[in-house]
Length: 111
Length: 114
Image 1: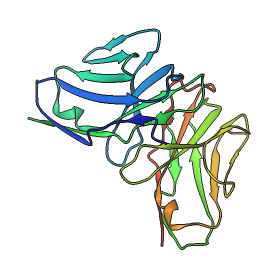
Image 2: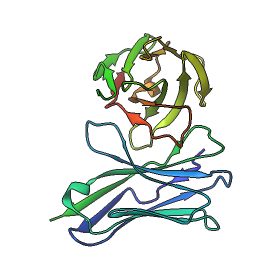
Image 3: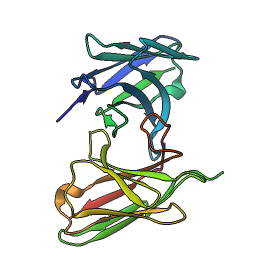
């Protein structure tokens, strides 16, 4: 069962512009959300997270927004850099249980 | 401080065989989780070990089993391999048992079952 969905398999953005990656979920019990970034031949690395008690969390160029009523979260990268080119996974967990991952979105930032 | 390492990096097996994959946790981490990532999909949780005991399991059959050793390194064993077991297997370690605690992933073992 796909409880976490990333409907865009790929996204291409010009360097310096904003990248917006989207994620939808179906389980209303999810209370913690994370974004991971994955380069080829490496494991996913943690990027940013947000608890369900917040609607926004910011860390440098990365901001995650959570819309609980729409069961939707998004990751904004501003400004985008070529080094941001990677696959981005969103993940969610409920009551401290295991994480459920989306299928990922491949971001390409063009110089 | 060493990161999470996994061995082997690649492996080819035939249907019906058994395989053991290994993971060395990041120094000081006592929790390890294993994930299966099929092509075009996100990682799927297999199980988690905390202080040598299984601490949670995803929707995987019993032929997927694991071990965690006193030094917190870990093994994933898969018996009676099936073609659909072909995937990237990732392990991740963390300091405590909580998805809210940052997990550090290894580079994965790519398994091909023929």
